[in-house]
Length: 235
Image (cartoon, rainbow, N blue to C red; front, side, top):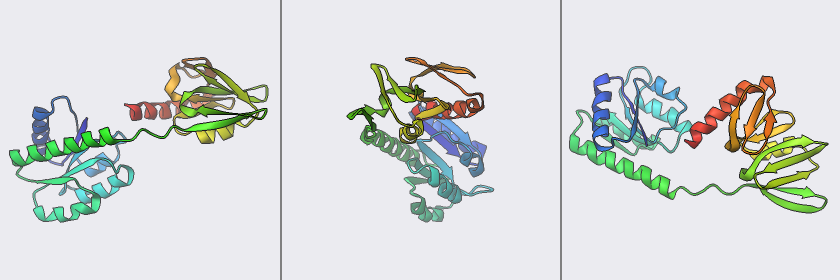
């Protein structure tokens, strides 16, 4: 569980962090001293304690911008002026805490926020199993995309490599690439790999659980960037 605290006052950041750590010592706590700093970060946040009155971008504007890219974060406003919280519904705030922070109120809001986060994780549906239908000499075969280790172009055919075997067909790699989604990457014009099965890589080769794929030099930086993003998303 990752809990973020965004407040331009260091003592408030530390105060909230201490209260969180006492009740949830295993939680990962990260700090931001401004809305601008918070909005620059791509890493996911589960629960956010956000000050409303900050220099630069205030908490309300920060929340509006944050919601454009993250609608799931559980947002708790922290404010010295209670009147501001009436705007909280516009940005889907979960709750609010008024400064000076009352221990009982904070504990109650924190526990409810954690319960909400736990509920979201329990009730989160498994993504629908995505697949592609391969037509080979009139025989249609359903191939689960998540089970594809990599695909390659060989003798004018696309060869799909799975852990349990291979399937080949006449088609375009670009068509398969467009269906595959963000978990796949085209490191070379003749290869399409699934990030899930990457074991190691260098600037010329990607080593997978079953087989290898070539890396075009110009695609290496983009591969590293997207692979790191994939790893962060998967936790």
